[in-house]
Length: 67
Image 1 (cartoon, rainbow, N blue to C red):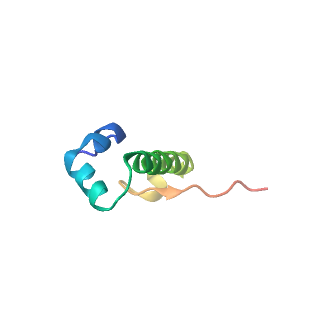
Image 2 (tube, helix red, strand yellow; image 1 turned 120 degrees about the vertical axis):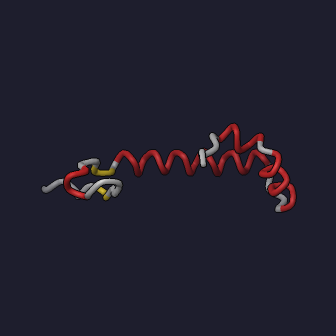
């Protein structure tokens, strides 16, 4: 299953119906998605992508640098 982009999620009729039922504005939902995307991007930037250390398909957070 393919993930929706933010613009696709905001224009999806089922998601819009859910937002109306829950009394959540489209603007509020857009802000939530943007914040989640930014946080996800920040976390992915801190991951250690060395597959030999963690095994295929598994990621772990990078260890802090030694002081």
